Length: 351
Image (tube, rainbow, N blue to C red; front, side, top):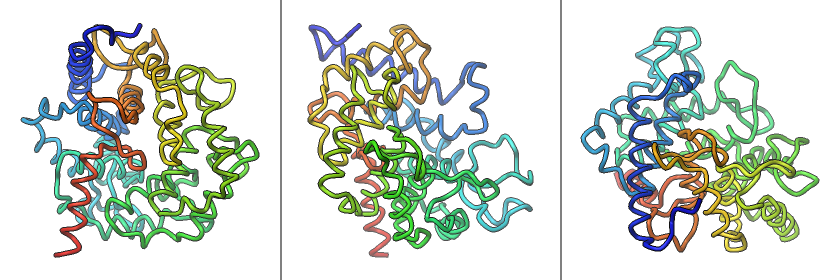
């Protein structure tokens, strides 16, 4: 059901209020069905905070802004707050679940990305971020092929963590942890036979990894690594992912989150205008819960924080939308937040 009908301004306001209420609730309490997400509580906070920003509704948490900022900082791993601190363990943990002094208490690059992005959105000055420790820690997450692992004691490496490390480096304005030549090589070697990007070299193309690859190249100012032929075939692969919404892989059902992953990938290569914007927006709106708010993975499914946020982000890519803040595709935060980050970078340079 497309709820945006005749009185569009009024319907937009209803949409904003309903989903702002849902995202605010996600910051306060989640149902027991989401208990498995407790270890990565920081990601839920990021989805809610950034979603409220895109809805231009950060005012609904204004009274809690400082306490949220302080809570995020409480999740930072500092040399002085864990007896198990060691090489590569700095950064932000996902939640206080393990607790300090737990042998596996350590920073995670995905959680660090969420923490830094959330702090920027909330207008923090990042002065309490241990930048040097985080960047030095990233060096210990780096593998010989230029890819990264999420935590130092795991061996899993793929494009998601390359992206997280690229965003951390960009936000902190320090690229010393990334071996640019090797990382670019890892990304380009993941360009597949069917002309998308896989999670690693030799794996199938996927909408999420395609976004992560292109966003990482964009943040490193390396999109020129793609030839005209590769860009053309990549554009075709992404456009073929649209049915009404977008699918992540061929022969899969459309899924709300890929409206951002694939849509943003097209945005980064200047091809977003080729999609059917209205059809995509109608699919996203069909997934919303008209009572509780929130967006789901598919129509008639239960909403969740991730799909709510990525659905909003997918809609915010539309340059003609006038009720959501525009999203900066490479960082997946609002252009307004990026303006604040640019000011921080300028202040750091002049200090």
